[in-house]
Length: 218
Ligand SMILES: [Zn+2]
Image (cartoon, rainbow, N blue to C red; front, top):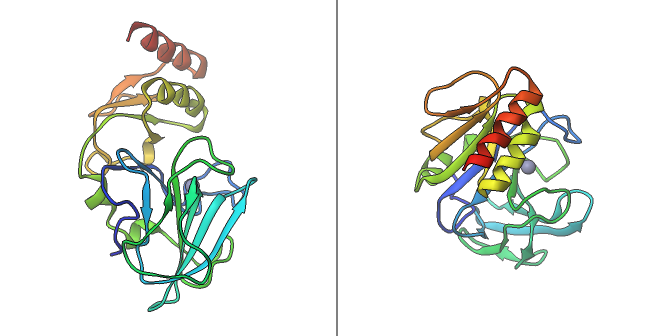
C-alpha cells in the first residue's frame, strides 16, 4: 500500500474511481481527495518527475511521477502550486505541490490517478483504492458535515448545501460510514438511510425546496 499523498489527515474522498458522470472518458478516471486541515501534497513513491504541465482546460497544474521499481505512473492534478521540476528524482514523502482548483475544477481537491505503465490518458488505469489504504488516512478524524446525493439530478442542490456548509460531498452509492465518517451526514433525495439526515421530496423540485427550507432554518 502506498503512503497518503497528504502530510496529515483528515482527508475526505469526494469522488470514487469509475463513477459515471460528465467526464471526457465517460467515467471518473481517478479518485478525488480533499484535505481538511492540510493541502500539502507529497510523493507516495520513490522515482522521478516524468512531467509537470499546465492545461487550463483540463487538469490545470499537474504532475506525473514515475515509480522506479514498478514503472507505474502517479498523476496529481488541479494543483495550485508545483514544487518540483521534470527529471527531478523524488522520494516518498517529498513535497511536490499544493492541492488546488486549477483547470476544469469546481473546488479545491486533488485528482489522483494511477496507471501501470507510462501515463496515457484513460489507459492502464488502476483503482487508487486498490493500492492506497484510504481507510487509514480518511479515518484519522471526523469531518463535521458530509453531503450525499442519491442521484445525479440531486447533485446541483447538493452542491448548494455543500457551499452553505463549506463541506465535501459525494454520491450516496459510493459512501461507506466507516470509510467516510462525519459528525452529520446529509442525504439529499431518495429514501431514508441509516446514519443520515434525509432532505428529500417527491421529485427533484421538492427535494430542492426541502434543502432550501432546511438552510433557511439553520
Ligand atoms: Zn477527479
